[in-house]
Length: 285
Ligand code: X90
Image (tube, protein in one colour):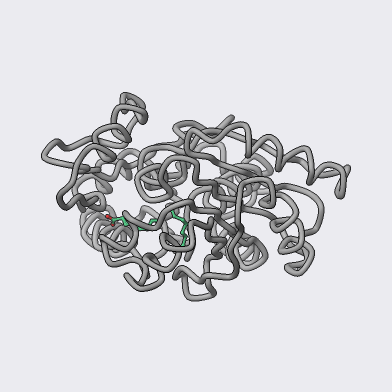
């Protein structure tokens, strides 16, 4: 493998929608989005109290919004590294990817020898975490820049994302899903099952009346999507019991499954709302 790679300073940088703040064995920086659930701004970093942010969001009647990281924040995250692998949420729902690309272009004018690749995940949350951990493993194995880009991109193509949302209020209010779809879901009182489409937008693929039906509905979708029975990550917004129930049911069908259940960070909590769940999983290639 590459012998001089340990002399190079390698970094993974992601926007905060990946829900994690550190990665074992690699230098990792999470670049925060800003969440504005009312007239207060919350920075989506380690110090964020997600529960407090959700409380403000639920109590607030007027408009609320989020903002992608500034170009400057990305530049600060790149500093000091020789090689940067950056991962962003879908460019089709957020300006985060464009901001990262602008930061790269500016930074490389004064640091022409630094290598920076930005992966547009066309997704968010657990799918980004899976990619980040895959990249970290490849770095650990001493793989080079071009190879990591190639394998990472291929991996991204083989990972999918489902989500189960009880409300589409924040997504529709911020123009990320159609208002009519949101009001139908609300009227029917169902949980919407969605997936990240191939172009990184939200695609409604089903609905569930009542929490009890969620695990079976998701397992059906996993089968149809050719889940490979290995890594599957579930992040939830204060919805541990249902997420854990889903984990147990998936384990019955796929005993080898490597499932992680963990709380969503600020950005995913803002949009998935209390009780929401986002599921990223590997598929057969
Ligand atoms: O302010 C910004 O630039 C951030 C905007 C983010 C908008 C969408 C976030 C969705 C988060 C909801 C379910 C997953 C959807 C994934 C679709 C590709 C969580």
